[in-house]
Length: 187
Image (cartoon, rainbow, N blue to C red):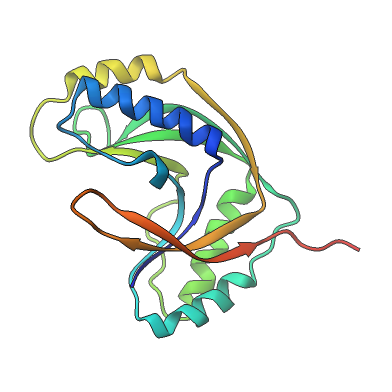
């Protein structure tokens, strides 16, 4: 099973990204554009994982708590690693500090049951497109400058998910395996 841990995004925000992806495809269809219904905020990628580990993963993730929901603002676009050698076009996210705290806690909890720790810092984003090596992406990069000020809206989230990923020629498809509400109960 190919697994990852992520936040989902609200449908109205997803629709805004669907429009942006549609515009991007018109500018340059050579990029591998994601399906808007698959856009998510990855907290931890687990990769190929035996099915018998799902219960331990769920137990580890179920312990994660925060005193408040995660506040998100979706705006702008950019490129990893940069505009000169783009490999990924991403959508920006401004988040309350507890998003990074939850990502770090997920990494630590899963490391305790044998998953490798992340070596790169957590950078919240939504992947919009991936680029094959080589080729010029100048038209898309120029258009992205116009997209950089675009706002897609806010969201407040109080749960994240364990997803299974199915790689298909038409693009990845995802299935939610478990839901993890993370707000601490107050008395």
